[in-house]
Image (cartoon, rainbow, N blue to C red; front, top):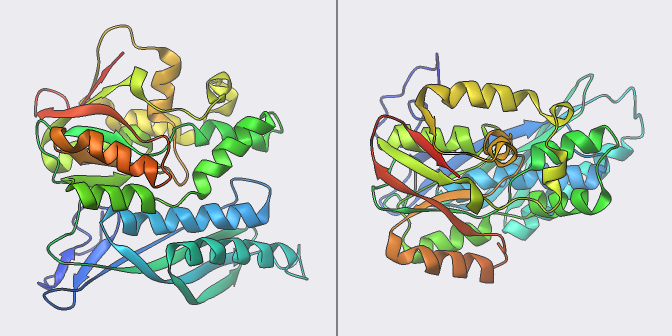
Length: 321
């Protein structure tokens, strides 16, 4: 992380000098803490569902590192002058607590400040074995790339805010966003994945770029294989682009090569910022099918192979039709 001094503590196994999803601190030869936090303004109108989504999003960072969430702290910014009874806040916290309970984590407290805009999320602590940490910098040439959730939440939530999203599309997106990444994490640990990251605000493009840069490899993505939220393709219009679509594109552009006649609509999903997206997993080719099957059996029904890892070439990301 830029401008944050690196620590010299040898027990800090993953820290500020990397672009990983969470920090990892070694306690013993068999136990390390995984720590992360995330919070953001509402992406949906329903406060309970918003709480679920924000919690699932924060918990995801621990899953991406191969860890198990254990405790969580609520992080709240709230305009109490607009809701003196704190009715919305109660629903938000209940939604977050429900997802923590589903993850087997305990909410132990939190902190609230007054703000003009609602913001909610969690600081999460998990556990991982120091020798079993997964990072986004260990993908290997020859690996297959598996994505465990469909893309398109940026388009859907933006259209929803403009009251112009079909209800079935919106409900499909919410179901995806509230889903924990526990299923994909358990599957990737069972089969022996090499590397992982969760796909959130930087989109598949940005998080894939960081995996490629950290691992010094090239990720080859096939647009036709990307899983999409059903019905979201009709929402790929300029008025539904998040600001991050542009910044994600600009971020990866120096290391991106688009080959052939790429479908312009599907290409936009590559850049679309995700909220509580899936895991992007780099796995040995002979284990890719098992990973997909196990993830689907555990509930990640959209898990699929979307590409492969190649030796580092002239681009960090190669996108094919």
